[in-house]
Image (cartoon, rainbow, N blue to C red):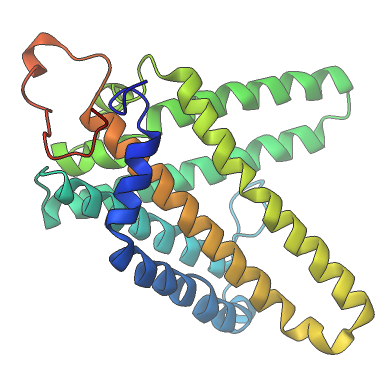
Length: 259
């Protein structure tokens, strides 16, 4: 299967081509996304605490994570687009940052709301219905937002229809790639289990373990974000479904492809 249809090998090459930039970007995400917020979280949470109606308390570090994650996504996709010859600007980057932040926040609120409803309903049948509704919402969310950053950075405005173009007729490939990203959660779960085990046998190390876990989580998140950004960029620039009026608009000859 050619790379312009699948994009897996092209995404790996795109990441490897930008490794000199992505490595320090990952370290920056680690420092600004976890180490600094972890130091300030206790201080801020003691003085400022607020919640959304019906939801758990929204911690200051969660807000910091939202901003850092969104900025990281925009920076990575911008880097990939520029290497592919697609024009972006500070204006589209600002709009993209706001759009991705809103998308991430909407996903967070939706997830918390569904979880709260499931916990409030005790009937098994109702919980099953809510569970399937959550799956349907996740499917819609992933399909419509996977190429959203690339679309906004190029168009300068949000268009769900044009962002969906990148994943059209790629449904099973999309979910296979998401499965690979979720597989990265396995080492995170292993580190969390190891943290609990070490904490039980070595109370002295329990102060350092949260930083180790947070750093590892940040690294895995950065790696998965780079992979998702590379794949979604390639898919959006090389859609499988292209209207006649766009037959020459979105061709990017410099984008890595398999011959």
